Amino acid sequence: MDASLLLGYVDWVLWASSTAVIVLSVVRHASGSRDAGRWFLAGLTGLLIAGFADAVVNALYGGDTGILGSLPYGWVFPAASLGLTLTGGLYIVSGRLEEGVWQVLGGLLVVGLGLMALYLAGGRVGGLDRVLYVYVWSSRQGYFTGEAVNISVAVSPPVDTVEYVVSWGDGVVEHYTGGAAVNLSHVYASSGAYTVVINASGGGLTGFNSLALSISDKPWTPPWPFDIVVSPVAGFFNSLWQALTTPFNLQLLTTSPRLEEGSPEWGLYTAVLDASLTGLGFFLALRLIQAAVNGDARGFIDSVKEALVAVLLSLTAPYIYNASVDILNALSMRIVQGVDPMPSIASALTLISTGVILGFFIPAAAHLAALLTLILAATAALVAVRHWLTLSIAASTPLLAVAYLHPGLRGAVNRVIGLWSGLVLAGPLSAVFMKTWSLQVGGLGQAVTGLLVYAMLPNIMGLLGGGVGGAAERIGLFFYTTALKITGASKTRSQGGMVQPRPQDTGEGRVRLHTGRGVEGYGRLRVQGN
Image (tube, rainbow, N blue to C red):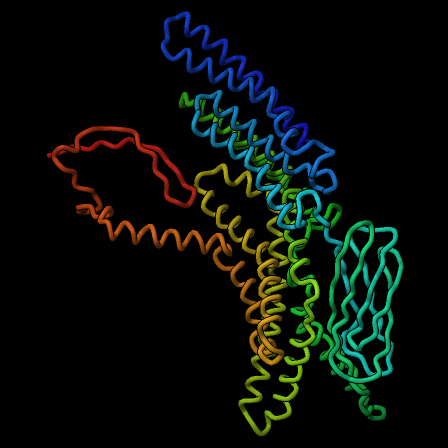
């Protein structure tokens, strides 16, 4: 089942429900019921939403030939908008007017959010340049002077003809024309640390990436059999170098991975989708039995409506994620365009090598070298964990959508979604911090503090507490609690966990409990005064 087929089913259910409610209102009016008019208006509103929601959404977005026509997942925004609007109509038809109105408004607001995101990323509405992802790798990142450095470059999505501009870091700039994958070669005449920057353009798309290389003079090699020690040691230091230079891969640091169709992660998503929809079927069957036993027909209707939203999210979540990531990655690449990580690389390597040499005489120098090495290793681990977690959560979105239907799991799902948003936002934050730090701080300062600021800090913010969203929630909760304490609104006379009522506080009513973490419940409260 695809999203368009599901939306067609939801539209049909709304048509049928609205018609049934109108017929019911006529019957209730004939029997003298006073609320017949309210139900008639609810059914009429449902018919209007079912008949005109699709036309309104297409008119706002311009249809297939409008603003979103050139985007690979442009259909996601109108699909999400239409899905929210139709489910809002179901709420209105079932008598849940307030929830329905907010749902419809939320569906229409998706339009504004989508256009705002396109404007911010593309510089102008309708002019978003998609990112051409440039993947660069080499069998090793440590070479000797006079030795050929071989680099493989591939772009995604595949383009027939790609223009490559390669800056090797030693003043040599070369231009290549090739396909979606090319092999490059270069020879360095002098030792040092170099940053290779590859700019690629093709099919109306642009992108770039960087790779750090270490070039050294070829050392003296001992004769056999003592030379058997050289190869393992050289291999170890090459692997260590590749791990330590991960933070200087601009694309890896400032962008988020996409959930590509046909990839192993996509296979995981389809497996999770099948299992989640099976679990959803069992959940609806149990709710039907519970509704039949307890006579809770309205609760079962609410479960069906929430299940429709869960299925819609399960089918569209990876496309929504890819569309959002494309926009954020385009924004990140615009920010870091022209940023040269070479000062940070050269300064960091110089400080580490100097610390190793002087460490025999000055312990503080050895401590500094060890600290910088630890920072590089920790940053590389954080970047790798962020990419792995981001893709893992994206592939698990069907499970999260179904789990949210259970009141006891909503708090956990909210935490995971907050973590996910923080991880995705860590890329643009790294881009902003890197751009600012490269302009405001010198080479030595970048070597000592740059990685902490633009590489570690954004990833830590994403991993701890859901990033910006989690921080805002905690700050808001702090000020809310403080305001209650200042105004005295939270002062109640309590004893043994029971609130002591005043003499005039006598009555009984139905209350709705909300913990603030997504767990809700209903009950009856009776207050008896003295």
